[in-house]
Image 1 (spheres, rainbow, N blue to C red):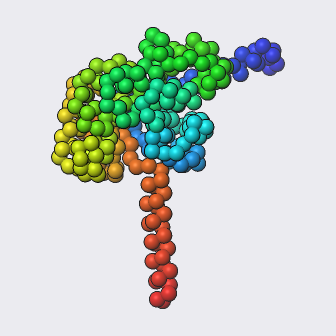
Image 2: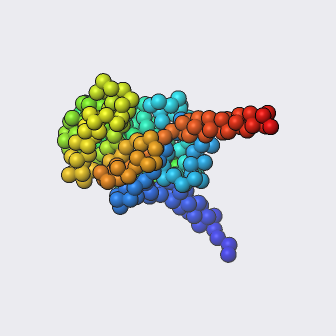
Image 3: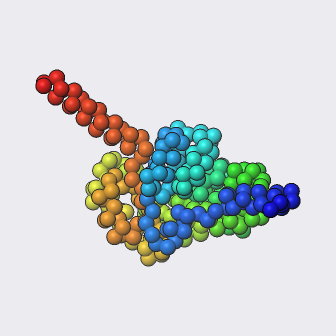
Length: 281
């Protein structure tokens, strides 16, 4: 069948729009109450592609502890989308400009770290959505809008509905004002960071200490009472069960560099062991 140029152009525009205006599968999964698993990324696009082929739901592109530039973030977001993963950006701080630029790069959501003041949280959350839900800077020529191929009105409606906003609870101050934080509109997930909480309590690294667990458990109880989705970082998969029982469904485990280091160490030890056996034989 021969179609006209107009029909062809319309089909291309619809294809591009559908490619960029997909439902946020991670957010849908969390809404349904289904747990989702993710990993932090500090390396490059190849590691993201591997995660997409090995069963993960999402990646957190780490700009807080990683060394990614915004150009890196753009490439990692594209890699995640092509691999079937939801790309989330952990911003380098809570400044609204970090939130806006991460979402303009096409991320499905942002993870906002190190907040202690209610007004800072309000400002960061508002930067993730457009009027009337927030005050995100408006630009129709970003990756998020398909570089102008998506009508901006459609983009606003879709983005306001589908963007995922995750706020870190990773210090004593934020955990103790959990009820105030739960009153802020626009937060989708509260993410607990045991390592930073332990540091804020003066016991850095002691993530199993009753003071750390008690602070997290108290805040989680408030979250469950208000129907707030919650997340946490676990060191090993066998620790997940205890958090699932507490209602946590946004689950992260390890960092790509840690995976590589563990696998590299184990393989090197195995290789050296075989070398020694061969020498002795």
